[in-house]
Image (cartoon, rainbow, N blue to C red):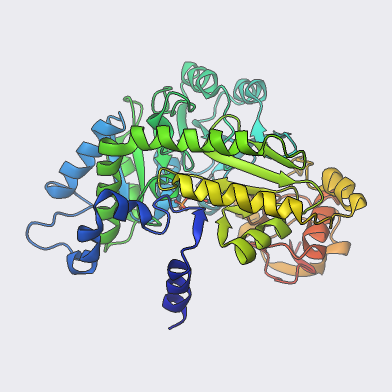
Length: 470
Ligand SMILES: Cc1ncc(COP(=O)(O)O)c(C=O)c1O
């Protein structure tokens, strides 16, 4: 068996997880006494029979469980999602925007926002982003407000908060301003389900006035991959409409295993969450303190402190990721040219951080120096640029048009016919309908030459790009 064998090997090798899901290879469940329930989880798998309720119109156990989650997360209503935050984003957008409506959104939004808007002809008004610390892209609050002022007919604003790298910003100012212009505020909090566990973390947008908040519980809290939650706050949302879209986008056979894992995550959050988060933040401080004297190791850990970005001078992030995995049995969340991102959760313990610290010191002491500095200059020039390509036709029109393939090098000025999404972090650099410019061409070539992953493009070798055939 292919999948089972690989996953078993990871588990049995005691791989140290600094990546999602938040339960860290199930270790947290064992530690807190949930093993007995989870050992029989396959016996609990079910469908809609007498007594098991129905996610699509909950009136019994699922309703009760969602209500408990709503209390704990301080929402007015909470929906369990079994198709990830992706389906929550689809339903949220569709519940407030119709065809040709405008949605104002940060350019570095998740691909699900662009996909749903492309299919249904919602006009995305992008707000440009800037790169902080050579690392995470983020919107500038004033730019967002300026876009709102220029698009007062928009139905809603859509904000990613925090970013994959844990960066936050004054989202409340944008939400309040959007509300003052009668717009709904949807927040993609896929990376922020844990935020309310400590006052040392940024506040969740549930507390900051957002109307619809989508959280990937599985990423930073202990639930199974693909299980998420959608929260409503306030009275700007038409619940019936939202629920009918949730029903459209979710499986007609919602997994009871995923719903059970959400219930366990809520239980852990309520009973142990704050203490464990306190321990985690102490362990992160310990790591930073211990590595402080190593000049070559740089740790970026602002905003959401559970996200740690580590770079080691003279070692490319991609190589650092492989070294940590193959030599030290540590798996990080992602790597980029500069370093590696660690997603730490309440499932990590002190032992994980001690091993990480020792491994990094060992790496530095073995004195690897493999970065060609001209490469770095190129990286800064190419990858850190975030200009938004001009749009010639709508995403929808381009998506449904005939396409043809041209060599990347010959695509300047053509209308892009596909998404180009470097992965990670899964953010589109150009979408159907936008004009291919030199910056995009250079980026794709950089990704190709460095053997990096781009999704969305038909040609896996990244030599050809689909353009609109007009
Ligand atoms: C910012 C952001 N939003 C939404 C999603 C989608 O979340 P899910 O995997 O739960 O569908 C992701 C996934 O990586 C993400 O990074």
